[in-house]
Image (cartoon, chains in turn cyan, purple, blue):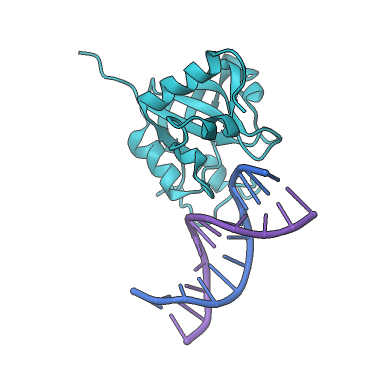
Length: 163
DNA sequence: GCCAACGTTGGC
DNA sequence: GCCAACGTTGGC
């Protein structure tokens, strides 16, 4: 009996780290560092498994939205940038013997044929309940239901834009 | 650049 | 434990 995978959404500011940056990494794989929010961390720690899939979401940019798909290839482990005083993610309160912050490794899978903007998500009733659509939602890692996952792909593949 | 929403900090 | 102040996120 095969276990079903979990689906996620992971935000990144493209000016800082875009899906193209991930795609240009060796093996198209990189660690997802800099998560400094307990709820997002807990999703990584308690929910993410190898083989899970996640939408790559571009935030704080001209057209925020879902641009591609990545695969979780390594489960949560300590985020070493928290121990590095030169890192902008340095957190003196994260003890190397008891790390406060974690990260996972992700591998680039593909871009969506057509990005699905936040405005488009909000325009679809079956997608507008997604957490990323909620006003003031600052969570950078969140679960996505199988229905929402399929719905986003359907919207991406369908012709034309929803305004 | 503005600013609302949110999470965290710290005084009490 | 409360809550005001603060810093950050992120859409617009």
